[in-house]
Length: 403
Image (spheres, rainbow, N blue to C red):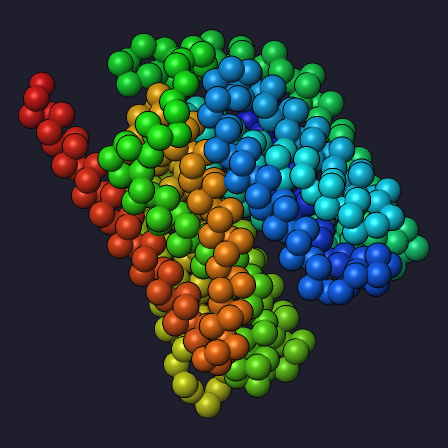
């Protein structure tokens, strides 16, 4: 049962990634069919982001009351309904309306699943699960491409992914008894050493924010997700406009940044249990900084800059899973769901705000600022995570001395 539920969670993480690339992949055709400017894609992604932030902040209360299994099933069902709704939308307004349940479902399932895995499974699974998210995010553009070239149109692409999510929803509903059985056979323990029941007292947002170190970890998480989303969106543009790389080469190496993240998370899974979350976070930010330096060096050849993107992607790989997995150890199992919900909200905020901020900076200063923008975010993430490590170490020493 333990392994079967883990397999279902792996499939759920693939489903988390599937919708994330659909808007970008289909928008060049969608905006023409809907009769709106290209820039209107930002309104849809903004609505989705607001929904994910709201549901992430509310995930702690929902998961405490209904359990991770039911929250996951209902949330995936919401995204399935939204994607099917996208496929039948004939106007931009309809897309915006369907973006609301899309965002609400995505944020709740992300927070619930991440906390459940952090509590019940080893660090290697957290890395491999997020690698599967990357697999899902990589597959969906191919689904949209097939739909566009086979005559199904963009609506067909959304319908295929929506139907896939609907099938997964049915599987998750059928698997609901597994969650309870796994909790009984592999119970996690609360901070007082007693097995967790899943129905502990609600941890309010204000209370969670007052936990020592929470502001540090959300700052580090904000920095990481801002860095990742900026690199994904602007890497290709920087290579073309800032370094004169041809469009095809720039697009290929920009995609290698994502491939570096996906591959790096798979490889990090083999090291995670032995190396530990703290070293993975520290090493990841340092490798990202090295990649940014390689991109920034003003050499006559672009080889080092292109390789730097791959290096930066590999550095990014373990940071997100390690921060999530370390949350129960850093802040206690009682508060982990609340803190992870806040972290998810910080992640979506960083992913939403940083790319347009860089767009403004690159317009004012020039595209050459790209690697320095990444380096500053990597430095911020490293400093905040190291400060958190020192705070947790002091707390643990004080607890030992009090025994």
